[in-house]
Image (cartoon, rainbow, N blue to C red):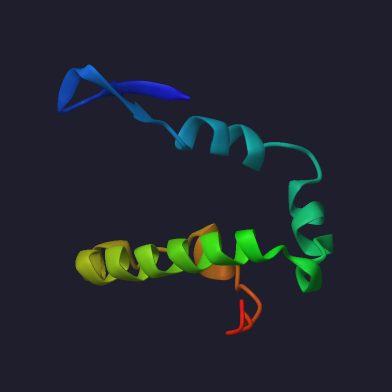
Length: 85
């Protein structure tokens, strides 16, 4: 989903929050997370997760104390990612 960029209304940017809200509101979402087969994640998904984890670490480091509140992402821990992938 794309929305107008607040900094430049003529430009569109990706909106991840609106679809994320719908996903978080789905019945059984937490159950599916708990039952996910984390031992058989495809290499392409592992690569994407590594990129996101690195990006998040940089963002949180830059924001510092402003982001100390609890969130779903702070409670979700990824399994140890094999270094060979």
